[in-house]
Length: 484
Image (tube, rainbow, N blue to C red; front, side, top):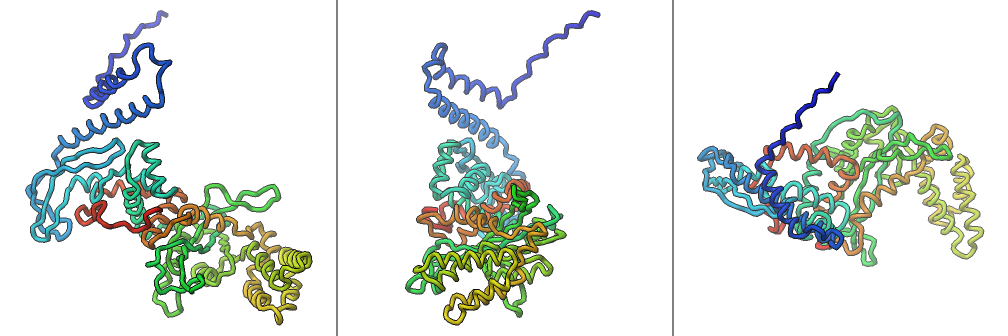
């Protein structure tokens, strides 16, 4: 049977936008890549130039398409976004926005309310451009970069990697604006998720970050003059540990950690009408991460009273474990206070023996040895109280036999990863608003939730933007330090 020869498919017609783009780009390439010149090219220079020209050509085409569409002027008046009265059409006005394709000048319908003096641009609201000079793509790039490195470094990265000239202050304002949106979204995100494993861990800790003097006015601190230089960030994280290492001990499952942090108080009294701000944060994270629904819930932390008060308040019935490393650290500090630095061998022998007793469950012998020095050593007396208070949280052989983690290395690493690596670098001095915005942004990205937030942000752009009410970039809304 002879095969039937089919005619070649007809060439597809280029779309109106792609044809001029391709022609313009080909003309640009002809200037640099002539026949026979390939071996002598400075390829890196050509790559960078062609990328910029391609983006500029695409941006010009997109701007012309958007400016030709005047559907944002459909009526002589529309409800004012502020007072609800009628805002009248007052012509079209242009503004240059920085987009991922480069600067783009857009013409938009402008409506003005004579009653309250508010003006707004419906297209800005629809495209997610309200109250800013950057496009959503540039805002996302800026926020992502600024969550990882300083604002100045983020500015350099955007220029080097994306060809975007975004100054450090613009990166700062943009990242903080997105961070505040992430924080507001976190407050509204009250989902209760199923448990990701049969055993789920929750840890809490706090670490100080450097802040401006105005943020510590009237606060007592650890400086020689009694003042403070830092404010404490409270962190809650949830993770699973179904994997096992070579010794058979549980270890954190890769990608399982979820973070949430802010400079906020964990203090509360019995007569307070509501739990503390951080207590509410812990509850939201426990629900969202599936900790609250887990068959076995484990709370890990150091000996700080606020951690265990909050755990008892929010998670009655959860297994409470004081981190073994911190417990051993207390014994070493006690040994140093008892023996001083003169007899190092005796100090180490005493501390190692006490740590061995603690680890193997000989709690009574350990406590007896510490108590023997309580009368002449203040540190030893305090140490006795510490171990007596946390005795039930230090049943390490029992916890290990049940296959549970007894160390809070995940929490310690979380403080460094989510907080220290970004907010505790040399020369940084934060305001609380700026710090909390970057913390919200960073925790969202590290927890793998930023994509979901951005999808919801894009879907809601046309319905929630408030245009004229949002401060324009560069109008004194800076909320952190200049070198963050």
